[in-house]
Image (cartoon, rainbow, N blue to C red; front, side, top):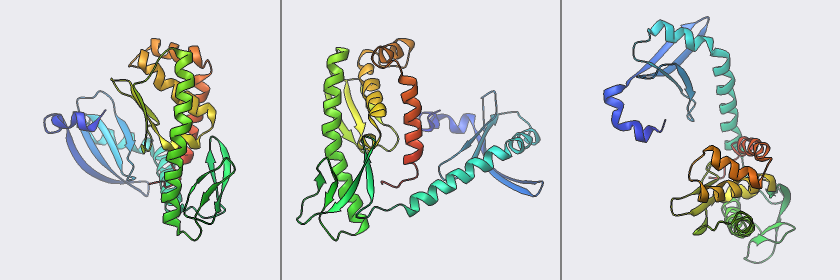
Length: 251
């Protein structure tokens, strides 16, 4: 549920408590949110805190038992998120590292002059840039390359699908790979071009399909399948790519 949309109802429908309890030499702390929902659920937030959602009248002891029954799952996911945060903190980009573009790896090369870019063989940058500046400039290069790659793919698939977006834009979205507005303006994250063409093409077709169906109904997925019959395989690859990218700090 979207917390912003639900925010107007928080005082009336939800009670929120911070709970800490010990069982079997384990301490678990979680925020309890009670609402008119029918089932219990656990959510691990990005700040590695635990949120438990429960019906209004569920006894506290029953909620604790539910949380303890999920202890192994909780510990596994907390460890994975902590490792992800550590990987992001250690992430840096330096000369001679390789970066992915359309699923292929290309080196970062120092090149005399003030220009930065991509020449189909490598990413090239002015020499002696510090790591933070290397990342900033590389992102600029990615954005420029993404505009060209994605515009070409949209043009090709638009003809095949018989649709035409009002505009195609590139943004810095972190996890929303693409979107199609009610006015048929399509946005893509520049990060998408790090993936291979299987994934890029899937996202492009997905967004173009929204020009016909602004929803995720069966009709929508039939439009996608008519162009990419193996779209489910591509969706799985997109999720794998997203998990990989979550370990890298491109902010």
